[in-house]
Length: 104
Image (cartoon, rainbow, N blue to C red; front, side, top):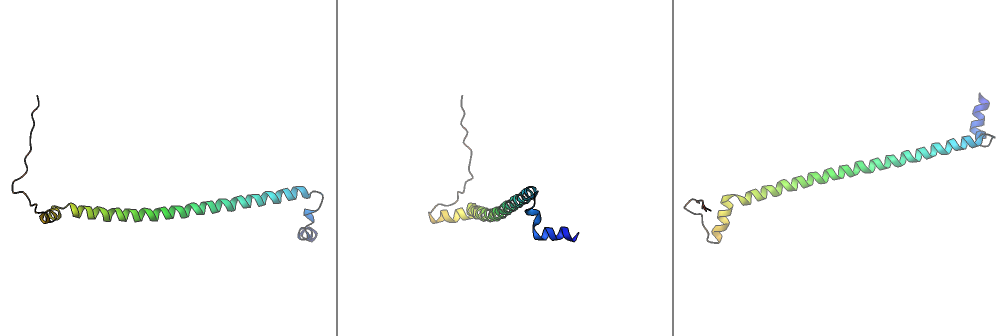
């Protein structure tokens, strides 16, 4: 038992007659480790990108709500009447009426 552990620690399994299969297995394991690390980095990049896009989405939603609020305030009749008063245009005393066109 101690002889087997001693051979492993000395690296004799890498230079003995059947070393090619051992080297092939070591290279295979290293290749799998590299692929796993690359995959992990790719996944992390995607997670960061999703978080960044979610943050941009929140900012754009907030900007949309603010803009919609401003537009709604500007469309109010009292604001329009105040702005038109500066141009000497006032509110009509008569209600609007519908014009009907009869066609044959």
